[in-house]
Picture 1 (cartoon, rainbow, N blue to C red):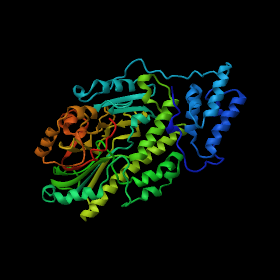
Picture 2 (cartoon, rainbow, N blue to C red):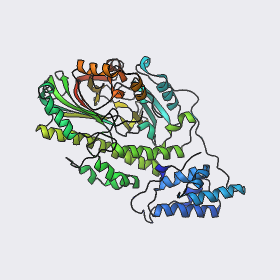
Picture 3 (cartoon, rainbow, N blue to C red):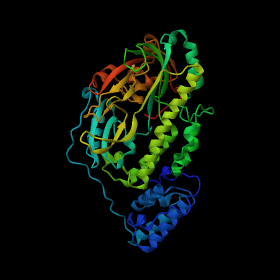
Picture 4 (cartoon, rainbow, N blue to C red):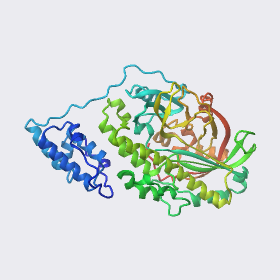
Length: 500
């Protein structure tokens, strides 16, 4: 039985006032044609909207779910839709206002051809998910990167181009705008050995990990002056949380680490060849992005009905309010994720009393409006995939004891200008806990001269694919400019357990 979704019942700050309204036409679109029933639905919907209990898209999503199945709503004690649901149940007992037949979007019968890089190292589940994704009626093109593994809806490492006015929350990902950021300092790489304690202290003092961790001192919070934080009720509701978490990292594979960067002559403009001390971080938009993803993925799944195997690939229409709201929130999450990294890097640079020679960064859970080679305008979803348009710089990390790489995109058309976002998981977190030997992990870290602060065996190098094999599978997609060897790695405390 469908339950009234708590994410669709979030208290929102402030009343909307009289300017915004749930119209009768919008209610009729749900299948409500009887005048009396329409009046009841309108009264409840606009009452919730007027007093700021829910936003418009959430109200309509709940009403649609209620019409499909009123029982869970009628049974929910104190629920906002309880009385309305009870009246629908009574009407149906009288043979009135029967359940509406919803249109279920059918998938294409033929699987479109899409390139798979490093096919021999990709699990069957990820391939199956990608095959389903390219059969969506809105799908235009797809590609699967060599680090791919199974996820929700679109596999991690999946790239999907859809029609220009559609966007799929689960194809962007739960951690919207998860991002890499690298600062290169004019210090010798040997500092990781000669100044180990100092560099560890900088990570201790200026990085924060955990599900709900916050900071009180900010280097630059000017992003919160943006008017975009007032664009929608959902954004306004999450602003305080986002502000409190500015400059923090999450759990799982998020990290901040010192390492040795080896740079060839002419690889990066203005920086001579050599071995440099570098700071690399990986994290996203924290609780702000996660809440946005949860909220709008549920709305998408309630509005876009798909076969069970494709249900997590439900999309939002950018020509409608909820689509525009998600687009605004996703892009703000991108700016926020970048600001998070800048906080960390700027605080550490200030403590070092040094300005980085350069900073390189990129998203890998995002959607971009782009054009295919033939000029077709599309929405490109890169879920765990790095933008690799011609000349575009990016970072592809390995694991805590294997190298990452600074790359320059080659603009490969078949890959939809994309590359992998890392080595990619070889096994799930639960499998890692069951099979990886802690002694073997400790020996590996000693052998690679890694100082580890935090983490657990679910992030052990053995839980990941071989980064060298992954890079070898995408030589047509990116050019390697520099190699980063991690040496002092900070991650979340082992007690912070992310979901598998």
